[in-house]
Image (tube, rainbow, N blue to C red):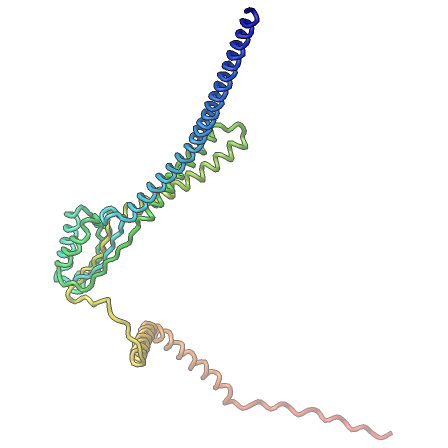
Length: 321
């Protein structure tokens, strides 16, 4: 009985040992599988984390490129009223009364919000000419030109435009950059620790400020030209000669020009001769009388015969020895 109980107990123990070993093996396999899954998940997470900045950088670059493209397209597609355009005009109008027409042209420019930049007038008769330089706001340019053309009979008109939008944008960018350079030089100047650095930084700051002032002056000039257009008006009287004559060439034209030059030279020569003639008469007559008197005095001694000289002495003859 004892032997049978011991055998049964041994079997039970072996069964329990086998069950424990199987349970341990299964647990090991489960833990191994979970570890592999965790490792792959951590690797995937690390890869995603590494790729996120790259994707974000690419997205930022794409967004910046799109923004720059949109800005460039916006600059290229600006409306006419948003562009910087310089308007200049030149016109000649023949009027009956030059002074009255000049006053009316001045009033037209003043009503448009402009002013007179220059006023030159020649003569006061029927051949009078007045040249006015009008500065008017760019939006009123076309209207002012049409009003001045109605003052009389328009003889000529020339309108020119110059688009300076790109130049204005470029100046704005350069001014912004130059201001940053000036601020940088000023900050460095406050940190100078030696006389050499101080002098060098002061010279550099002076150069940068001079460049900035030059760029700002150009910007102000462009702003003035784009804000106020220039109209040069010539108001001519009824007898004023036209200045827009076509140039002629050929033999006859040259002959005509040469004859005019010859007549002009001859006129100048005769004018000079007429101016000198009184002096020639006043000085030439006494001088001629004096020359005649001197010539007569030279001829009077020539009429008297020459005095004969005494004969030379004859030498005495020598006696023979």
